[in-house]
Amino acid sequence: MARGQREPMPGRYPVTFGEVELLRDLDRQDGWVLSKDGVPQSYIDLQDPTFLEFEYVRLMADVIDVMDDGPLSCLHVGGGACSIPRYVSATRPGSRHIVLEPDGLLVNLVREQLDLRSVPKLKVIVAGGREGTQKVWDDSADLVVLDAFTAATMPVELATTEYLADLARVLRPTGTLLINIADGKGLAFARRLLATVTAAYGHVALLAEPAIMRGRRFGNLIVAASRTALPVDLLTRRAAGGLTQARCVYGEALTNFVAGAAPIRDGDPVLAPVPPPSVFG
Image (cartoon, rainbow, N blue to C red; front, side, top):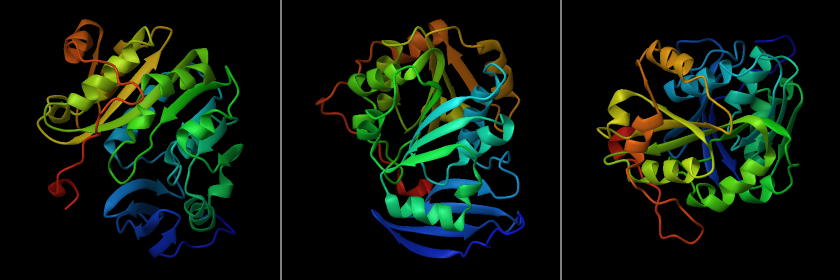
């Protein structure tokens, strides 16, 4: 623990939208899991913010690591315990963050129990993704991270053409958009979201563990998108070099993955997939 930092208290805590649980990692002295409804939402190590426990978060970090050197101006849609803002601040000193999180009591909990105040140049706006993004200036972000879930389900209103257009407004011309999605058998939702993203960005890559990419099990997939070329060769090597040897799909292979799926628009009767009970059981 850092000097003057209060030891977090494991247990259950009421928040605006239900209840969360703080769980200590028995294998790491300063490791903590933030869980809601039995679903792990965030993992942080208070002593080492560069330690990323979840594989999908490491894939997001791979994309961030291959961006141009230097501090980043970031918008994070979805807060949790702010694993990615902590990582970026540690690896790219001087970075600035705006975090959109609708649960004000959760924000207070993370401030008090998980030392959020120690993250420099971080501002939290207590608002949902669509409402909060409207308050962010045009062309102000090098990196936009869309990682917002209700339990283990992505809100569909954050996956539409209309909302992604608002995120594109915030993103600088050379900036990168990162989206964390979850899907299972058939990957129908992932294909429609990829169709939505590829309609707006000329350069898109999809990263995931092989079994998830093939739709054989439910899990997280990471979308990286930009108006300028992505370093896909670097991303492919970094993904393959991880513990799970993830795949990076882009170009013609990504076109084949989308396979004519339609973009998601406001009002479309689309349901985000719900994980089977065995995933977190």
